Picture (cartoon, rainbow, N blue to C red):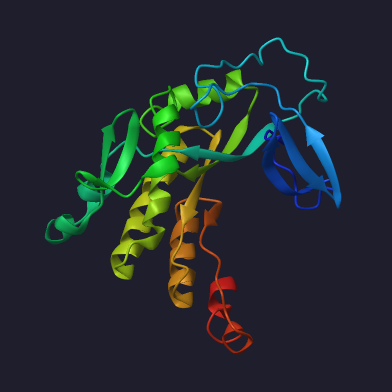
Length: 247
């Protein structure tokens, strides 16, 4: 398996950049293992645009990658947007007023109360850059698989996009319900991809026994991995409070 993201340095990389992003006359000054270096990146992003150029196309077909025959390319850090109003649709009638809504606006799938998106700033700008592209959202998995193939990618790990904003949903019982609905939705997307898209589920990380419960649910849906916030614990609570989450 080959990670298809060549621009992400591994923490174990011997030339890991410690300080980056400071510009001097269009050069980027970075520090590698205590030594300052200057690199001049190729101008690949139009002014005012966040992220890679929007309308680039994959050219994997007929390309000579130099990889051994039969190599599967696995993209380990992709993201996918939810296109359907899944939380409102799946909440019981007595809780629908508390369900976060999903809607399409200005080229992006936003989330929150109608007219009060929880996705703001650069986060929403990135979504507006890409969400209208074929396969960027869960409503066209066939196009997504086709786009992966055009990029020379066989399989992917797909993290959420706007749904990540719900990590801070204040009502924890409703937050777990939201995560359960998302897991069911992304498991369906995974199944429809026929082995090309592996969805990243969400678990209850704030309650260790809830973590065990939601992990069991996640596994029963066929999901292979999950994303959660870091669990901080003191040495006195690590053994007793958090151990059920990791058994």
